Amino acid sequence: MTQPDPTRVAVPVAVPVAAPAPEALPPLVWVIAAVFVAAELAVSARYGFMQDELYFIAAGRHLALGYVDQPPLMPLLDKTTSLFGLHPTAIRVIPALAGGAVIITAARFAALLYRQTQAVRSPDGSPETALRGGRRAQILAALAMACTPILIGADHLGNTTPIELLAWALVLLCVATALLEGRPRWWLGAGAAAGVGLEDNYLLVTLLIALLIGITFSNYRPALRSRWPWLGVGIAAIIWLPNLTWQATHGWPQLAMSTALHRENSSAASYAGGVPAQLIYLGLLVAPLVVAGFVTLWRTSELRFLAITASLVFAYVLAWVPGKPYYADGLAPVVLAAGSLAAERWLSRARRPRPRWALLLAAPLVGTALVLPLELPFLPVADIASLPKSSQANSNLGDTIGFDQLARVIAAQDEALARAGQPPTSIFTGFYAEAASVTVFDSGKSLAAVLSGHNAYWMWGPGQASDRTVLVVDALGQLRPYFGRCRLLTTYHAPYQVKNDWTNIPIDVCTSPRADWKTLWPHLKLYG
Image (cartoon, rainbow, N blue to C red; front, side, top):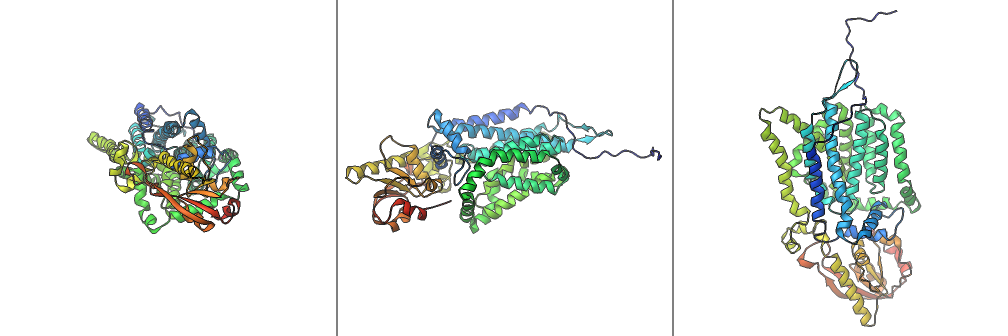
């Protein structure tokens, strides 16, 4: 029998083992999240609904397992919250709370990454982790996340982005916890978060593919041979299955939508501005944290799977839809958390850390002060026209002004035609925003059927509506070839002289159709 050599020293093996339960987050993290939620709700009703919110409310009146351009979760949530009143605040409560949860998740990421980078192994292989360290990193990660323009703007509105950002953050946190701390049951949480996220937005598929590649080309590849990741995949698939079935039985319309989005968001200007726009959405004054976060993820072998994941997602967005740079911002919590770790190390090297700490806290706060009037409705609505035109067209500001007035103008034209003995038999709009505004702000009067060829409205079809006399809203170019006579009635201008995307809208009337709606309908599809 071979005797052990007493001169040899056992070298600990770097394998993930279950770490002790982390301590509670610093109270300041919770304060930051609470202030964020309170600020979002405080201004939630200052202007009005945005077009996507109106569209999802309208979609909620056609509940289904799927739609042309999104899964069913947001229409269902908007239908549920609108039961408490057709009011912007009711629709925006869930997005605000989701934003607070993303901030908490960023701090959790900072704590997790700190424990991983500070953990050392004793000779018997047990972890000895500096659990009380990293508190400044947690606070900084929460503050930086709360101050990002993407979170401030997106979580003001009741569309798919708030739930999407939270789902990405939770999937990444659960997977990282499972791998870094040897807690395989967290894969089940990742699966549940992914399933819910896929019922909100299909973009999560990009993250899941990137994660799989990142893990495959990292030290954690053996984890894929265990049953836990695939149990998580099974949970996600079960939750997503109803919507996936709907897509399959309706000819996979999301593929057509994806192609349309690529076509609309891949101009030369979009490619040129892709990277700068990424930094703008995350905040120019926290850009050093973003850069430091990427460097930290790439330099730390245990975290490299996250670096690969983030890089692949950013590359995909910049290559396929550069005009939608915020599509990659679900990665912000982990990147900012990693950057906050680098910032804490920078603090630890300073002889006088307080000035550096003050600088780190001031940067996101100053950045927020600069962008806040451009992201949230703090200004009086009458002052919006004084902002740059690009800000007036911002969905958070200009696009939340005027839809109720548009609906009243359309209703007034409907009534005027009826009084003139030519009552409209249908109202056809160029885009879902205009159709949804009439649908949602229904005055209770017997208006004509509201139709559109845009996205889900096209799939809902014309029903039994007649096209004998059509009130045409922003769609004359589509309908003129199919009608004998068309004339302009009026032009709608957004109130307060706001130069948003929904002003100078022509309203016409068309008669003498060359065919009925059912014959014309295949020619009126507009996806995008």
